Image 1 (cartoon, rainbow, N blue to C red):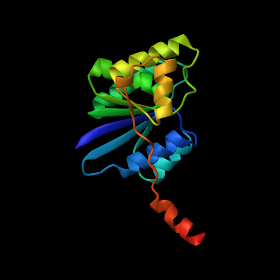
Image 2 (tube, rainbow, N blue to C red):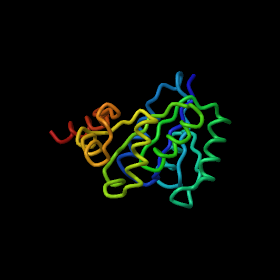
Image 3 (cartoon, helix red, strand yellow):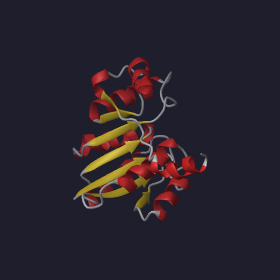
Length: 177
């Protein structure tokens, strides 16, 4: 069984957070043991707890927090994590740094364009993330943005569209006919 640490920067209601719930909830429990690490409590934490998905909150009081990295490193070792999957800017950077130190592979998922743009240090950070991880963009538009604005090479980014469970909406569609 593989131990997977999922990391997410935000615990608010949103697309990345909803996708994370679906992803973790849908993983084959006979093959993967999931642990979710969040930077704060909130909606996402509550949704995971309802589904009995183990969650750890390691607060991040500063924009870049070295003590956070040490606590996360300890968590990786204590839980014998085999792979990390992170979402959003801060946890993508943290997970990539941890991967560099531990050798644990990481998948970093980019969900939007609000993180980098005109900030040079953020562009540099994401270039490091792209070299250290398997980077995933949730759309072709986002991949093009990362290539153009952050200057990440095309071969460092894969596109995986967010999935939608159409079965959840089938009953509603049937009722509207």
